Image 1 (cartoon, rainbow, N blue to C red):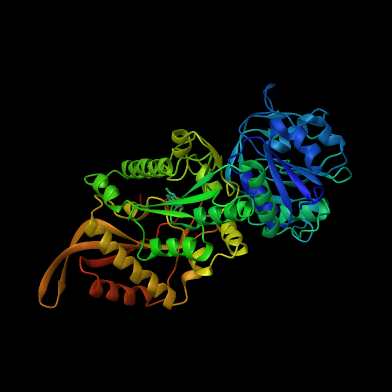
Image 2 (cartoon, rainbow, N blue to C red):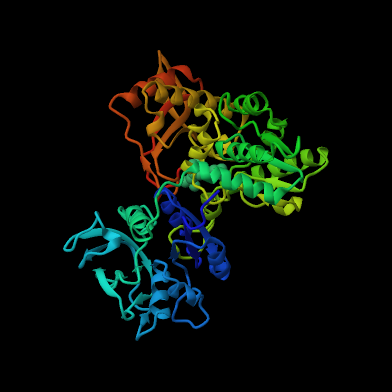
Length: 523
Ligand code: XMP
């Protein structure tokens, strides 16, 4: 069980990156909980935290009705770190002639100059140094409450970091939780360990124990159906739920694997043998490949493909769930990025970049309560949890694969022939990557079969075949990515193999685009 004083309470004021704060705190080996500001008061009594972090948010503290932190948080003798909106709140709630102005916002990369030592900077930043940070604010603090001193400044934010060391209150205008603040994780770790005095020995084993207890409490003796997509996330969610319910009642959990026929070579078989063979979890394997292909005939628009696949997945799942006699709970392997990728990452107007396959849809249709034990985790954390649960390394370490599968790697119409070509090319690509020992250095590698033909020459003959694009990226969490630089000669050797062994393509190109401005998948 968690020692409730060994934790940090993160109060969410609506920033799109609040969960990244939790992630950084977890990386520092400290347990944290994110709670909406409306329930912060109750959470404080329940958790008795050793520290509090106030998140950013879209509101303006200059508006009277904007959210506030419970005032007693500042009288509890507990360290507080306010980030962006959280810093401005501290300014307003801690009194004095604090003024927050709405002029002069800053967005994107900025540099702060350290002016004084501060516990947040221990072993990291020294006075006189300049450091890169990520700013995203409209309002800024123009004067600070009694007891505080500025410890770092930037051109756009004279109070980029302020501190009241006696009360252990800190405010940062920038976002230490995003990777674009290179030292941000270590600043948050300093807050958690040095300032709050936490040991930093929390591990994924404790997450596993806490989540299984939570699932048992949520589900009780009711029936759960879990939709498997074939990927790591839904598999880890299912195994975690299986562990939670294993001893409470046989067959409480049934997994339904909707096989849309758009998986990579061998992947569907792997899922089936893992669940039936290794875990002995009741599994319904629905081979719906024909139905998906038939519905995709003539569909070329990326969003239309995604929506069709999402909808059909739900239809098939629903039909199977009915055959099983229904269930009270629906389990999904939703991750945090699935939740936020539908809205913009750096603030600004909310736009849908891509309709993600695993969010929404099912719950509304089926009127079941949701069990989503991975909702606050990021992909790499799910892998750590998967290993913790004993899933085979070859499965857990697999590159991410999108819910809509190969369909979004075939721009234009998805046909059986295109799927077959792509499957063969993709298998060779990954085979060469593994043989070169590069698989684990790459976040995700895949081929895209373009709807473009090019002229080539093979032997003495002219060819007119399709073009294959190769993509390989490095990334921390899939939210941003860089094209992977293959060592010299690799791509030429691979291209020769692909063109020789895969009928239907005669040219191979490599995609060097980072995210942003590109996305990882092409559709
Ligand atoms: P993008 O293309 O948006 O992809 O840069 C980011 C990461 O998400 C994966 N992806 C998906 N995963 N359902 C998923 O489960 C989806 O609909 C989906 N679309 C993209 C993509 O492979 C990459 O890892």
